[in-house]
Amino acid sequence: MRGRNERSVLRWTRKLFARVAVYGTLLLYSVWAAFPIAWVVLTSFKTNAEALTVPPKVVFRPTVSNYADVFAAVYQFPSVVANSVVVAAFGTAAIIFLAVPAAYGLSRVIPWGRNAVSFGIISARTFPTIGLAIPLFILMQNARLLDTRLAVVIANVAYSLPFGIWMIFGFIESIPIELEEAALLDGCSRVGALARVVVPQLLPGLGATAILTSIVAWREYLFPLILTTRDARTLPVVAGSFITDVGPNWGGLCAYSVLTILPIAIFCVVTGRLLIKGFIAGAVKG
Amino acid sequence: MLNRHAVPGLAGGIRPTACLPLRRVLSAGRFRRRHRFRFLRRRSVAGLFFIAPALLTLAATFVYPVCYNLWLSLHSYNLSELYLGIHFVGLQNYAAELGDPYFWSALRNSLIITLASLALELPIGMALALILYRRIRWNGFFRFLIILPLLLIPAVTAYMWRFMFQYDGIVNYILSLIHVGAVNWAKTATGLLSVIIVTVWENAPFSLIIFLAGLQSVDPELWAAAKVDGAGPVRRFLHVTLPLMRPFVLVVIVIRTMDLLRLFDEGYILTGGAPARTTETLSQLVYTSTFTYFNVGQGSALAVVEGLIVIAAVLSCFLTLGVRQGT
Image 1 (cartoon, each protein chain N blue to C red):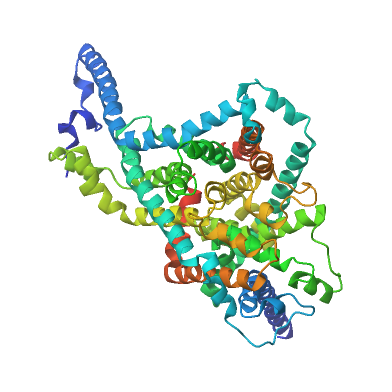
Image 2 (cartoon, chains in turn green, orange):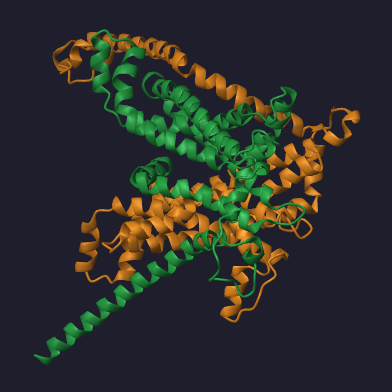
């Protein structure tokens, strides 16, 4: 009777230890992941003089002057946001319109399509971005396209189109072929089969692809850094303009960071599942 | 339903060939093969119509620039000495690299960052995946917090961290609280360390996501069976989970190796190569050669070499980790 009791106590403590370890690790890592963001949010409400003090101030009189700063005329914040949105949206639209027929052709019509897709995605993914940026910079200079949104869109399409084709290719492969065959037998053309049979089934996949290519364009730093100077700069590049020769504006930088994090966090909460599904689909199918 | 036998191109069902004379079967086969060949060629031509727009776009925006890059790498071309013109120098740009100490230090830095980040990201991602795979209270909330760094704009993240790595910044304050003392993050070793810290903070969730997907594809009965056989949690992980996760580990290693070897944003923003270009990564080296020293020929050659290094790394990943998976 006693032995059994002891054993159950032992099991109970072991379970407790395991639980403490699991939740402890989780809590610790969450703090490590969230603290920098929280600190930046906090700093964004401090004045620039309070941003870097030893010891750091946790209690202070909050101010929104940094946010006012970000919207000051110097940084052209609204037009920078517009640039980022336009670049992401047009790039994604172009990629979808080009990639859907291409992926369909490679999956259903061309016998050697699968090999072409694998080869294309591997060569495109291994090539360093900077190696594409140098020739594009010179070509854009010759075409007088530097510092235009079009230049950034072109660079993004060049970089992400193989990825888009590869992703949509995977989604088309997972659609059963029988429906299309039926449509073709009923006298539907290939284009008709694509538009009426494949695309409706492809919509979730298209959504995931669009989200991913928009994210890639939204995050891209190197292309806009090299291809733009003033008018067509995007969000990642303009973050640098808070650190000037006169001295860094840390408060402004933090407010700016918060303004870029906020939409991502909201987006993540609203479409979290979809986003992560897209990430997995994008990464694992190779 | 579709009657497969009625469609010549789709025929695949069982046919009563056994009762037919041999010759007729053979000739039918020959006919079918030739027919199939023509059918395939016709399909290729029809397919080109579908892929033409994408192919042309890629040819103009990707293949042509890459070839142009190769061409540039064989020429002497300096934007600050345009009066000298562009002339063919053969492999001179490549030869110059081998004697360039900056190239070797950049290669060393990229390798250090890649190996250190991988060594941290993979175990962290695996540990978190093993935890979050279970039924945990507030699972969604924890996932959100942990994955958030991955979704931020890397350049903005790097600037955030640059602020926190200031000498009077919060990182040094926390270090002094735990009696490590303030660290000067502007040295070579500490600069590289700061890049590694930021990269891991940002990208550990990537391996977490992939490993979670991997764990979800494992049949739970396998764990149960191992448990019945008396395997403890450690042995269950080493002998059941890890072998099953092999393809997912490979995917993470390959993708992260490619991205880490090409790392630019974090290095460029956090250290800017300082002090004295000793923390430059390969991509930064290409950038400074091209856009600070305007030596386009040299920069292009470096970009080509960087691409070759990435390809070599990916191939070696596949060869060392992928082969056993196939058997």
